[in-house]
Length: 418
Image 1 (cartoon, rainbow, N blue to C red):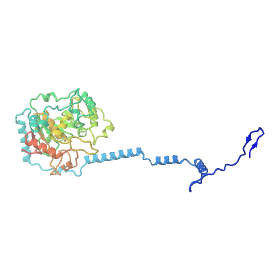
Image 2: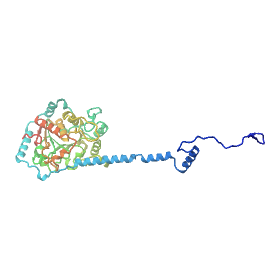
Image 3: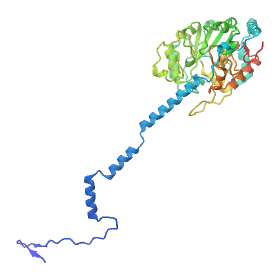
């Protein structure tokens, strides 16, 4: 029923709304009740969305912890690898070294003297290598790295040790520190040079070849093989000490008679180490962590005595002469395509000298308990644990050179001719 106000305006009386609401499905509250519940929930506790986000965040993996775990795992594997390299399962008793027949000693000394007394044959080693391996051996390779204006040569085609790809600036920095890059003048002046590459083989013990070895024009020694205390068997003359950082002698006494220190660079930190040695600087502690064994802190030589081995010699030795497979990217391990320092030194000697002899070479794996080196207590069996070099292929290579007359084996470890 309508009523009028005092001002004559019709007004409708207020009545409660009686609109019909559809029944809610079973299990659901009425809209009004739902709203009330929602309001009470919003006021009494955090929203469901925030709670879900918090839960997901708590379940999400911690990236930092995972990275730390990976680093620790890699570091642990590296430590195990170093221990494997430095320790073998068996050591030889040097007091019970194999017996050396006195007659064999006389024959070895006589054989070495006969080689020295013969007339030297100019370019014999290069000519013989070229005939044996044809296009796989380059007769015009430079033995050491020189400064050059171009960075597109063979030296920069591969990564170390087969080349200096990605390290051109580091190489140029090193070369700027070296006043000389060639073979010393007093050695180049000789018309016909005889080289002897002295290995570390235990077969040298007892042969007393020291006097004969000192008579060669160029004496190449490898890694940390010592002279002090062993000169009767290995001589005391050193023209070239050829090594990499971990192989360099720790004693200053092993450098005093050296004409040249020839560095073989295998990895990025080797460049840092060599620069520190040339500049007579202390190697940072963090750099030392990247070497698998202790390295020399100082090398008491003037910069003019340092040389960098031409990596193309290693590349040619590995891929062309020994016909190893080229490097492939691998997550772990190596392809056994890196020649030993001894094999590299033999090929280097054919580029430096007219005639080449070797002493202290040969791995007799059929006698695992014979001394591996002339200066420590490692057994021959230790060679079965190394994972970098293909000893079988290298032995066959040296045997071929000796039988073809390219090399003379003074100690008879490869093939005895006396």
